[in-house]
Amino acid sequence: MRWLIAGARGQLGVDLQRVLAARPEAEVHAFGSADLDITDRAAIERALADLRPEVVVNCAAFTAVDRAEAEPERAYAVNAAGPALLAAAVARTGAKLVQLSTDYVFAGTAAEPYSVSATPDPQSVYGQTKLAGERAVRELAPALAYVVRTSWVYGAHGNNFVKTMLRLEGSRDTLSVVDDQTGSPTWTVDLAGRLVDLVLSGQPAGTYHCRGGGSTTWCRFAQAIFTEVGADPARVRPIRTVDYPTPAPRPAYSVLSDGEWAAAGLPPMRPWRQALAAAFAADRVAYQPAVSS
Image (tube, rainbow, N blue to C red; front, side):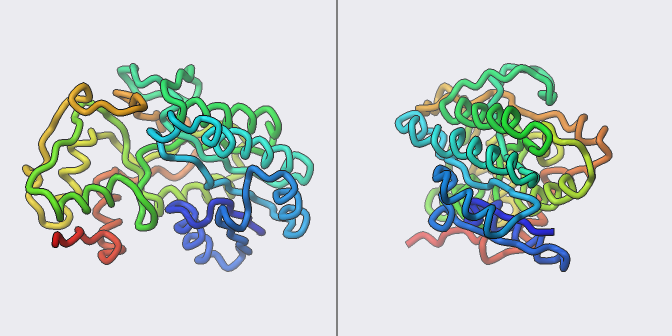
């Protein structure tokens, strides 16, 4: 099976390549944003015509949540217009499309995990543009596209919360992290494996939720990261969201329900705490605390 990965230099794209490399039957064509700009219609059409992929996975995204507030046009181009171009292209070729989305499409005011059918209500430009991308993909390639919402993604490559906490652990005696935002951390290796499982499962196109098992707060997540490197988790102190204002509002509760995923017979994601330990065990070099000067 021929796979085309857009956004292949990011944290999920790199790990998706590694997961597919373990499958001899997979022929993988991986493109970073410099190699394949998903906002360039002609470039997309050339790539699909030349390579004839059977599966296109879009890992490209504008994920700088706060910067999106100041650069909405750029965020929209990458998160909405680009996926629309990909969807239109696969609709002509018949390839399957996997479009990654986010828990930020929801308002974050729920008291229980958001189901696939819950009404989106994004509060940030990032969430709004990702929702626009979802809708474009479903409209243009309804029988071919998997929209996969996930949350709090981290991996050994690129920038993410885990890397930030490790950098701060090496440079500060204590740090304050919000303890009233709840979500599900998701390791890119686990996510990549489940994306492959979904494509190969024969399940119909549609929207799916795939995230690390269980839930936690950013503060407890940070404390677990400290624990993994032998640092005192008590150095991470809880604060409230109101004490740490940001340009883009964050959802207070954005846990995605995995009920529909399980009902489809797809393999479950392991608990987030187990996944974090596995991530550190798999790549100790990438997850080293920064050494303060």
